[in-house]
Length: 223
Image 1 (cartoon, helix red, strand yellow):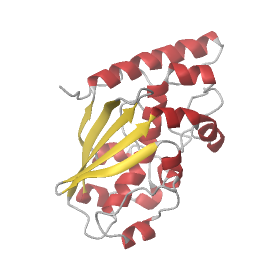
Image 2: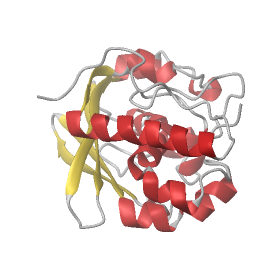
Image 3: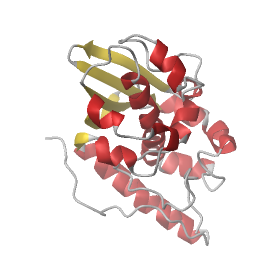
Image 4: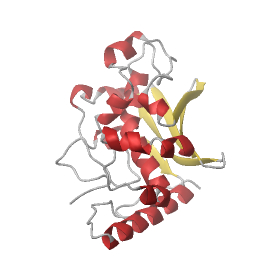
């Protein structure tokens, strides 16, 4: 069945919208910062340069603090939506993501992007010299009015990172190493509704989409 996204691993279904998964596309979006380059950097070096594709598509990263390590990652919705044609051309989303669907499900699409780039950010940080034993990662997005909204946050340890075969990253690897994941309640509800809206819109167009189920499993919410 066709999907709004094009998973890197063809044998894997589209992941639940609230999870973190390991897509090799994440390392591509990092704009060429491979393991060798990342390993030459010293913590806390930037985990994403301004020349990268991810930055061009609306992602910003920064260290909120370095001891203990806290990395904040933000998607600018306006920039993200403006570059949707490029993401479709690059294969992150397919041509079913029409302008109408883009307006109907921006949070669903932004969440898909964060799931794809997260592994690359985590890997870049923990391959720096002097990387911390643990780091907290927090995703948010800035809406069209400039207001910032939380999405999801989680912890990763260097020990858990080192257990992953990053040269052969597999679907689901990030789920095995992300600790204490928390999904913002409002964001989760919005993505939940957008998932339903998109499913209905595609069915009316005669397209069967293998979108994730809105209520596939239990999750942890923010207060």
